[in-house]
Image (cartoon, helix red, strand yellow):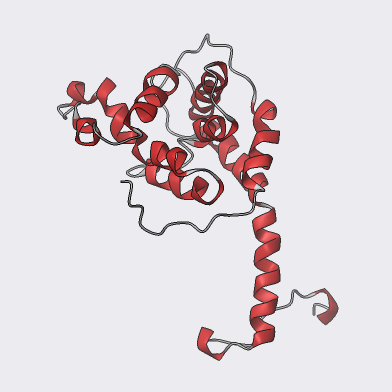
Length: 198
């Protein structure tokens, strides 16, 4: 039998409406510790992309590293570089809406423009291939008048769609880890549940 001293603290309730102030103080402390470890979980999720969707000449991790490297070489700021690095992090768990997943992960830590780019990059990326699978490559034109249209177009044109090159000298994941920790250790903004910019 496990010693009571080594067992993790737990709340007293079985229903949330029965919780006490002490229960919620405990949960808040545990949540803060969990949030502090977010950057390491982001790194692990990126490492998992090495064994994700196949068929390309590079792994999903290598594609992400190429995209981030090109963003840095193109003069992007730290927020956009990290966004480029994690833009396909949702491929494993949200293959049908990976763009929205990546946007949701980064939303509390970056400016709204960066979130919008990640949320929309799946639609904008279709410009480069949709006609080859019987879809509308001009779907992005619905957002032609949006004030961040050009930013998302640049993200896809210059960094994302060109980053499937096995000969490209991308920076390794270790190079980007300090940036991941910097961005995902920031105090969180109040995330908008429904963005008015989509």
